[in-house]
Length: 151
Image 1: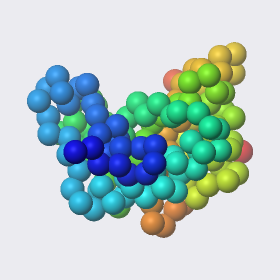
Image 2 (image 1 turned 120 degrees about the vertical axis):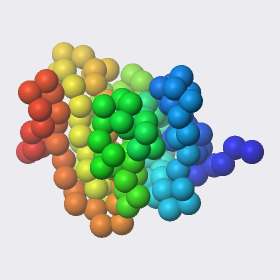
Image 3 (image 1 turned 180 degrees about the vertical axis):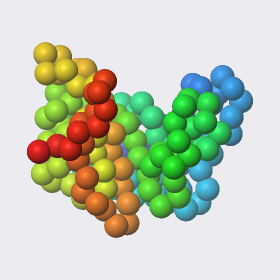
């Protein structure tokens, strides 16, 4: 049975990984992590879906420690940590910077990163957003040179 986290988001899309499938990695979150993914969807992703009235493409959600290791991410990543939940996503055809600013102005995010965005291509890069019960409201931009604080 497909577990729905919200009207438009399922547990499957928040945990799917081609790398995990290819390497036979168990990428199943525990009960606490599932609840945190649900909170991410309820508090941030579902409101974005409703505000823009367009589907959201999740490119990376939950990652098990083994999956983090194999893709070169840290096990302390918010995609993996118990107390947080994170997703990388985009809304095809919508300027990622516009979505990024919308989240900053309207939603209670923990951390948001506009990654590898090019001003000349609205479809470039992606958005990383995380939820935490105690949100920091940290906004960053990441490019080839590293992370910068959003003004």
